[in-house]
Length: 278
Ligand code: MF3
Ligand code: CO
Ligand code: CO
Image 1 (cartoon, rainbow, N blue to C red):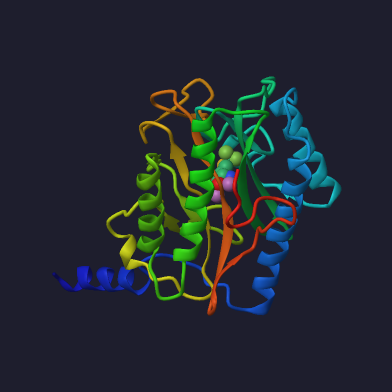
Image 2 (cartoon, rainbow, N blue to C red):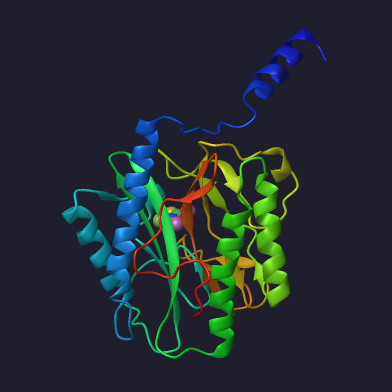
């Protein structure tokens, strides 16, 4: 290693990953307010999910509620995304674009909300059962919800990112479902997506990132009935589907690491809480 290379290597080592730490009261207040508003929006949207509603109607509800409260939907215009929310129905894994599709009994739909409140981001999603669904769909949604919570419980200061992915993939395996690998949780704060990446499976390398107070990130496992592999819809550039066309379900929360453990910033008042049975 010559001198120049050594300097470069040292420079990279000094900041191996740009993981912002939010330790000041001011920053934490910004994050908490964004998470709280996002959760309030989820409580509002949940009441409207029923057979007959179009995914475009969900988008309108999200868009108007957010603007009426003086905030901004983060999805709208993000890398060209055309709507204010992602709505992912049945075999759609994530990033579904709201449109004319009308929800019908038996569907499962993930609604993924992200809001910007005074420059701070809150991000969460829930999967809803529309009317009566098959037992397999219900079991999948239950597993995705439980996977989120085992991931949250694994996120303790001193543990690593690997512990989150290990806990989630173990639960999925026990329930007979697979975990999507191409899409991950992510650091969040004054940006939508930042370091650290949070894989929902034991990815080599994630053991190098120790969780410390002040880190803020999402956990958002996507579980599939069949294969974990996905396909991106090339005609719209966004919609991600399961390769085999079978169902996919997801839940997401934004988490702030504190000295006493994970603080769920996007906890709702009326939605499913840890331990909920669907
Ligand atoms: N909310 C998604 C996430 O959890 C990202 C959606 S990006 C969009 O990270 F552009 F599709 F809206
Ligand atoms: Co999200
Ligand atoms: Co997210």
